[in-house]
Image (cartoon, rainbow, N blue to C red; front, side):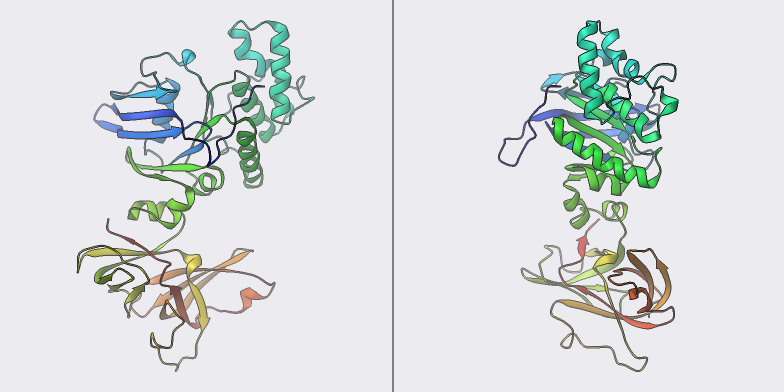
Length: 384
């Protein structure tokens, strides 16, 4: 099977899919709202968002199953907005796999080539290559009901890849698998994409799935594009409360920007009994309403005595924000434990702590007074 070289940082970016002001309506419902987005050749790109956000509609418009009401879609620089699905250099793997139960694995994979009139000898060669690529050598004569869920998914992948598309579209491809198999298939999909270099465009509502596999992600909500970037950028530097809240877990505190200097800032939040200190500037108007977003795993827990006074910032570790609270709930998750800590204001804060030894979960108990602390570089400060 022919391969496209995987893009590296040293190679120039070359767009393979371009959305230009794309809008799609169903009656009065705007499913996709003026989306402009570029996906590079060789990328593993994820469209991420809650149900009904427009991500699947956007994918179906790339496939040609839906037509934009406004804007246009380019694939490899060519406007395909009005081109039929079978004439586009893309192929699609559906959520249900859509494997033909009465056909053998080999016949399933060869189906598209047979419809296209590919000679039999070439079909056999390309089917064998595709099955080897998805690690199903020797499975050609089996029927789908003789395969596991993960193997049926690989058959669907082989059937899509055997036609050598420029872009492979994947609509929630792992949602029907159990948790263990889903994790395994994440790795296999990533390895497959890196091996063949074909652009993968995947739709998912699973944040972990997108963060684990994609080179870049686009977060959508109510038809609109909220933010696009590398998974680490979306997680560490969200541009809005929606993105911060949708990607992973987060504690959000509303406050006012009271100090804003180039190398430090201070936020006064009503739910915290002390200011939040930052070791960087925020670039906002004095007194502006902001939201402090802190991930649970960035919060440290330490025990304290009931009569121990609240430490002053002078006594705190460099760059730390320290707040007192009481543990109200603990959930043991195996590799880590999740804690819900109630502040004096009544607000509950979530913290995650890795269990480095077999006894770490015994360090804290419900009802125990603790200090919560996070470094001044940890929070994301959001204006909307």
